[in-house]
Length: 382
Image 1 (cartoon, rainbow, N blue to C red):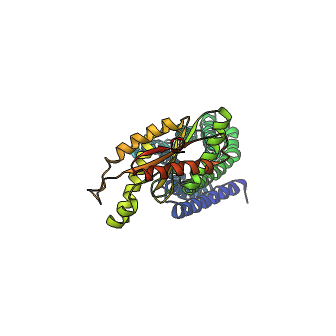
Image 2 (cartoon, helix red, strand yellow; image 1 turned 180 degrees about the vertical axis):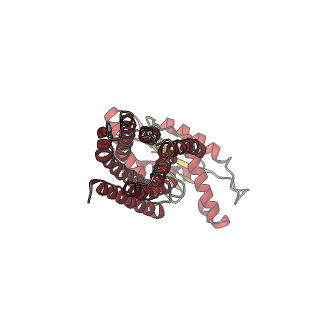
Image 3 (cartoon, rainbow, N blue to C red; image 1 turned 60 degrees about the horizontal axis):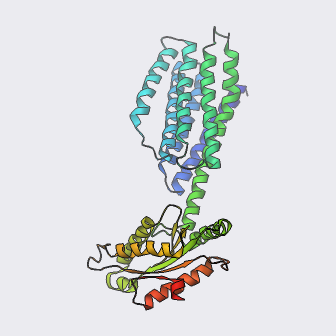
């Protein structure tokens, strides 16, 4: 088997495996748009490499044109998928119009004009720019790269540079054979490795996103979208250690809806679920960035307020207590919601979150015994 046949077989196999992998990931792990778009990108690449092999062995200009069209579509879909994953607006015309112009130019270069320099420059230059833009689009907002993202970014950038190097080396071609050594070396040795690397990195990104989703689901309550008991315990262990190390205050609030069981019994669980979601949203809006809200179970929620002594935390909860009466439920329009709150701050003797929970829970029961719909601080209740 000749070297070109080996390389084309490798590229075809890579595209086939990636199409299957992305298709399975889309079907079974959330059906995310960018994963389907990447599956389509590699699906087009399968046809592209078949056309490339046909063009090489049959010396067919038409198949070479189809190869170029496939490469442009595949690269465009890859770029669109990156945009979708990044949450950016995708304008199909921004990809379709330049792609059509490049396809027309390429067809002229391969057909009527017959310019090897134009053939070698047009598509690599366009794909190189497209991949460079894709790499930049992958850059995350307001956070650092994850390791899979960094790998994908690096490989995309290398792919872009490789394509641009191809375009540059094509400009050095002076005759049927003269000046083609560099072009062939890049095309035969460098680009297949980068292409395979891009596929591997894309799979790592999808796997990393899936792992992040699973971690999110493990730590968050599906009904209210705040942390669950496990999530708030994990955050609390870090927050307590930081507060001790920096000698900063830390407060824990335990709260629940007054009369929640009666609401469920009278108006059904849909009304109860709506009340819980509204209460969780109100709590989330009331705290600062860096504080956390979690659902401990049933209608009971816990809040950790960083750098806030108990009195400050109680003032924040007092505002929440006053605002909750303004919430209205479509399922129970005449119901007025109210809640009770227990507050405890971090003490020197506290070894873990449960120590703070016990005091905050005690303060909550004091608020309940005193008539509900109020805020109680443990030190005041002791």
